[in-house]
Image (cartoon, rainbow, N blue to C red):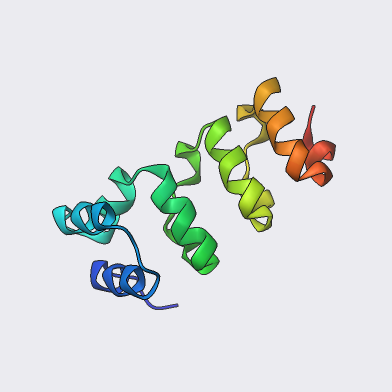
Amino acid sequence: MSEFTKDDLLTFMKEHNACKESYEFVNSCESIEECLEKAPFEYLIWALIKRPHLSYLVNWNKLDGWDWVKLLRKCPEFVNKCDWSKLDDEDWNYLLKVQPQFAKYKT
């Protein structure tokens, strides 16, 4: 897979009618790495929903329990990336309402 660049991200955003604030954010960054480092998680979720193959750009260790819930509710295909120990009881309750198949990961 070729490297995904900041210009690619801007093109992707245009194709998917991204909001003005996200353009301003991306344009304020020097590189795609900086964008991903500083991006609000909602931007990452949006990008992963539209293009799951971009997951190689995500630092999964930075996600907390609530981040995982938001992601897995919409993108269950990332189940194998999840650090289940980060979810608390409230996170589990919210996740299992939409994705009950994940109950097997609850310890």
